[in-house]
Image (cartoon, rainbow over all chains, first blue to last red; front, top):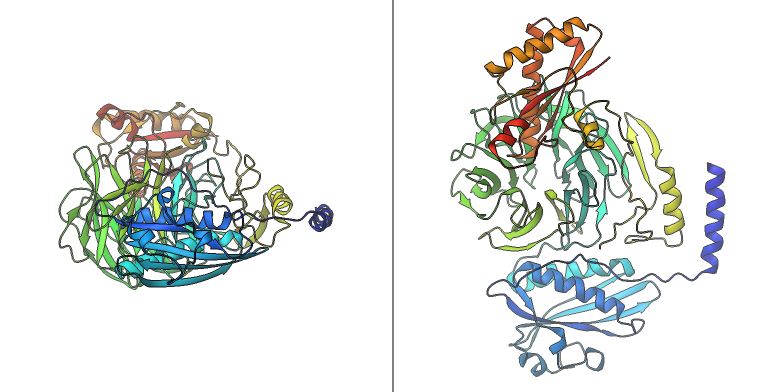
Length: 440
Length: 188
């Protein structure tokens, strides 16, 4: 085998020396139907001025496509149709004093994105600027450098910066979603993609059942439950090094798990019909037992500050939501209303918990204060499950059958306004888990 | 049609301290497709080929289990033992199933070399994770009952599939009741 590999490497070296390789800056995004939110502010996203190397405007098109998708998903902005733009970006300047604001005020733009691109082989530099059109003022600018594969991520980071400049709070688009899908006529497999659908990546490949993906803080690792050994077990994948560790602490059969911000594991294991939560080291050694009452303790979700976690327990006779310190100790009951509350997710500021509650006709998503106050129902249509909070706290991803089949949707956490389905519906999509910002 | 990103070098699977390379074919394909670029973040090349993945299991590793049934499209195929059923969000053996369990115990007594795996299943209402724990309670309830009827625990194992392997998928009381079950899989 080693000999074969050496020959292949030799052939590759030869091939590489003969064929010039052009790396395209394209990033495909899935179709997504996003209707503009009420009171969304009009923004124009102009093409990037080519300062050399992007004559075909490939980099500009990719940057604009991803930025447009993300700004629309934010629900703060609606994009003014580029076909109506008066100015030609290539024949005008991109910074203050080099273009006419009147070309944009006449389109009704509140905000304007302009910028430039320089490409030298696989080295790409983008300067992107945000303008306040009514005040004719430059609000913010960013410079990005990278290779052609990085253009989509540059756009995501700029979208986050635009939300920071326009609202005072960074956007969530430099983050990923992990989810379970049956797409491609497969059984349940784990996938990751950017929030906007870019770079779909299938993590698992086995014809069994894979469930409950959950990221660590940096997004470098993912935990999930799989039946691929024909027994339910937890696995932690190092997505960067492409290594996988089976977590087998000898506590019985695995039921589910989550990663703490620093990569420790909260695992749910059942023995003799009782399921309890345990804190484990990253390699799966037991640190301590976290629960010991009630037949069932499942669905851990860790507050991003690493202090507390929230989980479901039926110790009261029905499934209800509880919080507890990662150090162990007493659990605090959060929910009392309803006879079936489960699948909790901590908000990033650790002050709220989203969960699903059984109602006549299906499940609905609620948000409640960590002290049990102010429960508010966010969803009404169809059956809605598995909420997961965005790193900026503005949004919740969840699964719903509202459109037929099960898909993942994006809604605002503050009012339950549903922005768009995030998945295409080629199969059933479930178990969304939102990462922290990938760039830190 | 969104292409699925291919990894660069296959996956190395670490199991119990041992390290082995999974899917060497993927390693070679990854080199061929990605070898000319130092970074292949968004390869998307070779659409239609295998995506990358962890743990390539073939079909049929679990005998007559309901998971094998999923793979072969035969979930619900019956062996010599009969299913028992449960109330919603409940793991208590119901009176009408006492006779079923006694009959299952008789079979196991008469066939002393047979082993049984008890599968706990749930209807599709509620979170997946809670239902896996609930299915485990259901499987354990049957195991405990068979133990009291004299079947050795050594011959019995349990597994929960939660709500993942339903017998039927309609949103009706009848269908939900069918899915809330323990299924008994025998092997020699």
